[in-house]
Image (cartoon, rainbow, N blue to C red; front, side):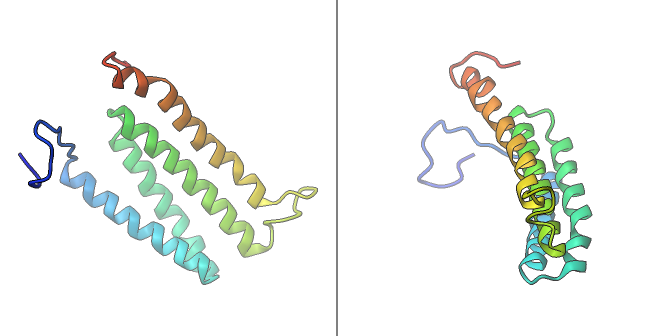
Length: 138
């Protein structure tokens, strides 16, 4: 099936089930609402959006666990959102700076950001390159 006249011949088409696409679209809405509440300093809205946003992110990760690339990228997104929420809570309550001897939740949010980064580095430096070069990554 060709998507457009500019698609190269023999190009693989990547597709996901519609039920997964719908939950991903919902996730985008939740994430935008959470970040909009953060930007507007609406504490209750921002705090209320943490659980649904993280829950849907973890659900997406679970649904795509059998596709290595999707799993690794969605795990990184899960940690990104966790870091984002940590930073947001810190800003809402003034805990973003100087909470722990010069460190606050803003700095502590680097831990989940770093975990997400390490997950992607492990993927791109390991299985991705084996798969790209025609070897199976397991």
